[in-house]
Length: 145
Image 1: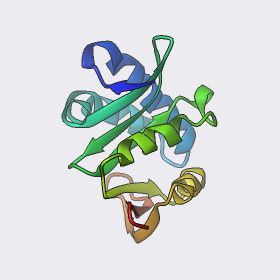
Image 2: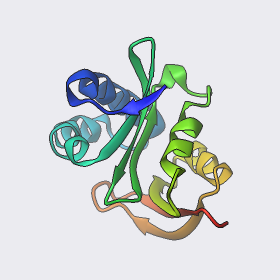
Image 3: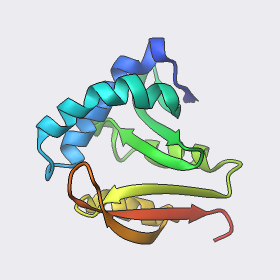
């Protein structure tokens, strides 16, 4: 079930998923980067994002955070729960009532890029992520396409 993020109930589980899934999906970036970024995500990004979580039997299995309105700043599913349609359902939830969504995905994360393409996202531009120096694609989804 998809529910709004509750800082008191969900922060610990969301941060565990973010760290574990980041490590798994982005092996090309040193783990130290994710560990050093975690406090910023927890204290500044999560509280200011519109985040929805997938909860089953009291446990968070995934989450999606919208920042700056219609930009997906994070979509992560716990590695043990991937391949069960949770990411797709979180995206469908984010698309409701919207005409446009954008996101950035690392080029080296080919599985995520394929997933987003299947879900109707198309590349807008390739750029370099300033924080990591790795190439990423800015992608967009439009309701009318």
